[in-house]
Length: 296
Image (tube, rainbow, N blue to C red; front, side):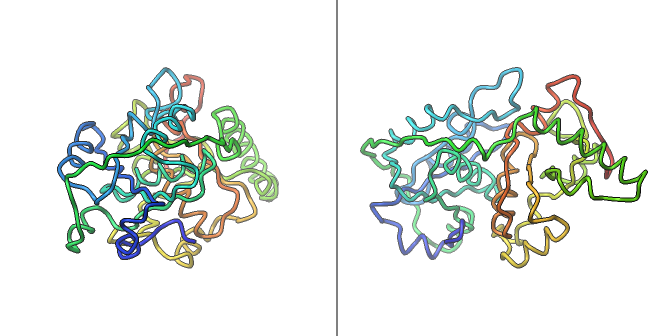
């Protein structure tokens, strides 16, 4: 089954007792706005998970602006919401799916495959005159056991090594006229907008630029104008310059908007995709890490 579901699909299963709907709305810079929006109205039966309080751990020196939550802490939170390892989860937001995709990735990282993203935003759900409520459901606690999948993650040391080897391989390719050394290396994908990648307009972090050796695939380019994901065929064409046999490591600013790119890559048929969760904000927390700018 596809990782995304339509609003009509969800409407038909709205009161399925084996399902939990999760509202992931969150506005960067306005940390209370998402919960306030949830309390005002949400899809019936939905519970709320906060990007910074639930889907991230506290910020420290390293780890980026949205460090991954402790798996056991998140598992306990899910348990309190009545979510078990058998629960089907459907996540939604109003931010083009980026927060819902963070939850999608996190749950799969915890070993839970029955998680889906509503491809339509909450606003689209409302515009369709589908039901909303301000009633917060009473949940019976359950047990969610984390089964962490470490192979889904790439750490800063590994990313640094890939960056250095990519730079060396590119230099060798220029000298010898061969691109073969690159074919054995993972591909680094930067999911941010092009102006941030190039270092022209950094709006979130203290330093501008990108990890040397990375290529830029803006995460919103995987979506249609209405915020739904493009088809598998369209996404395969979008990522046509990438080798499906190579490992791919995806990052963004803080490990949130990289998640829609991970989803899109998998939808396009890429099997070996990992997340550098700390992303750019973690990379620049190490003073010795090099920074590139421009299109290369």
